[in-house]
Length: 136
Image (cartoon, rainbow, N blue to C red; front, side, top):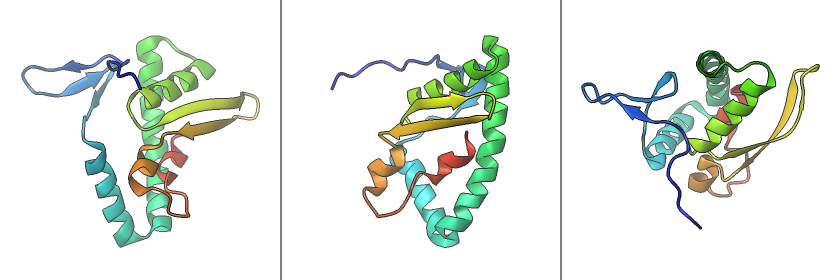
């Protein structure tokens, strides 16, 4: 396995320490920190209740991200979705691969490989990637 440098632009404000990629401020956190927080909330709320909350928040956030990125890069239509899948993959969530897309129906099939959640949860006999469902 070859190691490569990040494939997305990252700038850090020298005065505030805020990280930015393209048009949006970002956080850079260890995977175990993020997933352990996710697991802790799931333990208290239950997976179904937490999934519902994450769907709504993820949907809102995905729209915001796509609008800002489309504006930043001059993207439209399916190019915005393709850019979104590319950037998610480049940020370590997993590798998101578009299997098919139907603009007329507003649907797409996406395959996720190397999920950050599966790496931590392992095989537990249930879906653990529900955080992504509201994202696309």
